[in-house]
Amino acid sequence: MLTELVIRNFAIIERLEVSLKPGFNILTGETGAGKSIIIDAVGLLLGGRARPEVVRTGADEAVVEGLFDISGRGDIQRLLEHGGFESGEELAVKRVISREGRNRIFINGSIARLGQLQDVSRRLVNIYGQHEHQLLQKPEAHLSFLDHYAGCRNEIAAYVEAWRRARDLEEELAGLEQGERDRQQRLDFLRFQQREISAAQLRAGEEEELEQERKLLKYGEKLTQATSGGYESLYGGKGAVCEILGRLAGELEALVEVDPLMAKLAETLKASQYSLEDVALQLRDFGGKLDFEPGRQNAVEERLARIGQLKRKYAPTVEGILETLDSVEKELARLEQADTRREELAGELEQARASLAARGEALSEKRHQAAESLAAAVVDNLGELAMPAARFEVHFFPLDEPGPRGLERVEFYLSTNPGEELRPLAWIASGGELSRIMLAIKQAAPGADGVSTLIFDEVDAGIGGEAASAVGRKLKKVAQGLQVLCITHLPQVAAYGDTHFRVEKMVDSGRTFTAMVELNADTRVREMARMLGGDQVTDRTLDHAREMIEAVAAEK
View 1 (cartoon, rainbow, N blue to C red):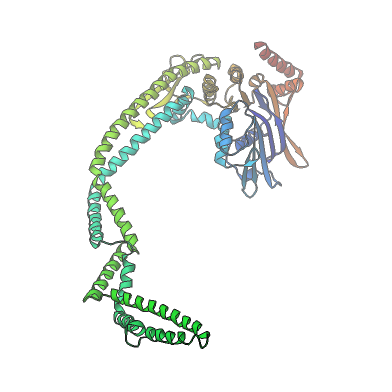
View 2: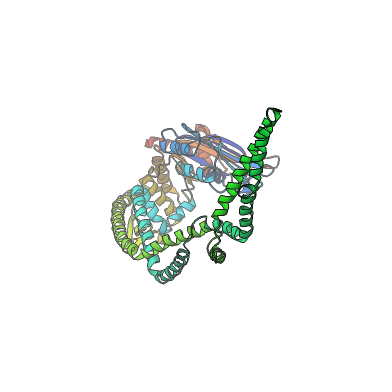
């Protein structure tokens, strides 16, 4: 329920603060006073479009704030918690629109996105204006009205899931059948790639090994000379370095008694000898591994060239080529299994269509049951709205194929006068009739959508007299257990309000201002008298207004 509304610098409203109450809230005032502007501001709180033109002349930004009582609304509280907002028994929404077009949204003090606001607000308030009435003239909207009344959200969700499943399977199966030629061409291409890469028998790291071997082959003669010559010079040949070092170390050791320093020098020579012997042995072992078989260099070059060719076609590395082969083989397996998949799809599709039909029939059955109940309730309500001879029916038209919303389309039919045949609602309903039909539908299931605040913007357009009183009476019933705000120009409707506000437009120092004032018993009578007699309020119109209010009170 909307408990507090604050509007600043919005259109002709400089500042407006009002506390709203449960039950039936009436908003009246002269034409152009700003009643619809207030509703537009509330629309912003619900996620409506923010336009910089609404910023009041001379102001930098417009601000609209609303405080909602959400006690007992676990669904909204959970939604707030899921979105990362503070949650309690109250919900504060604020929108700021700058003249430059910037739009900021706050939910319980935290910055929010428009989608988050709309997710919350659609559970709080519904606004019924002339646009909403026009929806009744659009047959495609009638199914939504019926589903809303029937409360078949779960059945719709189950049906939509089954419909999407069947559609996806149909599209996949159609893709397999229509793409058979492309599939064969793709298979040929993939098989060629598989043969070409597999024939090369690549292995990871092979290219690096070949590059190293190529270097060895290129400098093979020098390596042979260096390793064998080095071994002979250091160790293997006559007069080798190690032999000389060994002999010299022995001579120094023989002179230790002459000078102890000779022992240290002898040890240094021996250490050098051992190190050089190790180098010599490594040169011998390395040289022993060198095997320069005839034609090997050509074989290495050819192998590297083959790898280079595959790299240019498939990937910049051998590892990448092997990954390509793996991908090719997986796609081959999938395409080669297409026939098997086609058979599987056909079986799955048959089951999905059976499930879709079952869920569609369950949804249709609930709709048909609800349609009879809705029609009866609407007829009863229309009788109370000065349309006693009205007949209302919900007609079903089966679809050739299951659609995204069910197995049928729905259209409302109406007859307003005795002897007239039922005709599509869009053909015959006037503006006043549309208002009353909307109200009759809303009375049939006031809480079906879960919102607690309903706003009717001139729902009484095009009617008067007893029909206007009937509208007021019906709105009063709708407001039982809910909060209803209604803009009206008719005193017959206003008389039924629990709380009456007057919207006033004033001019001060050349600027226009709008205010919204809650009326007490005396000022309410005076406002009703104005609505009855215009600007000339007389004792007679005051008495008439007082009598209307007392007559409505007596109905209780």
